[in-house]
Length: 130
Picture 1 (cartoon, rainbow, N blue to C red):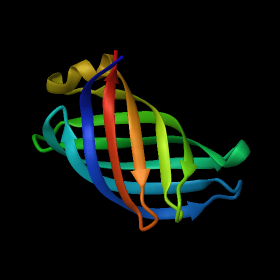
Picture 2: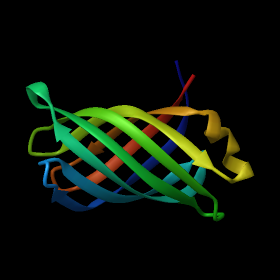
Picture 3: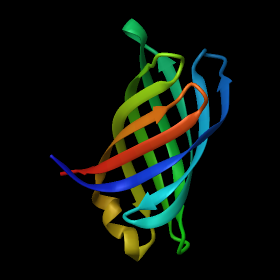
Picture 4: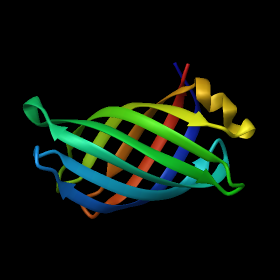
């Protein structure tokens, strides 16, 4: 069952590069909210093409809130290439933080929807998985 929204964000892909194993590494930066607090997030994920045009991705990043708290994350997901060359992912995320304000994230698994337009505009929503 899905719980409350943990993170909601929008931003931009800033770098894409093809690695020697033909996977694609993508870095992005976004702004949004973590548990209702303004934040900036930077992250990088690596994607590989799978059977039938599916994508498999793994990523990590850091969200820094407006009050200076840091929340790190690691995620995995499955996706597809959308019309025009964007991507759409669904997956799960685990969090770590030293911040007492966000400590409950240390025990939460998030499930996310992540979309990137062909032009590189990125948006994501992550819900608590109860």
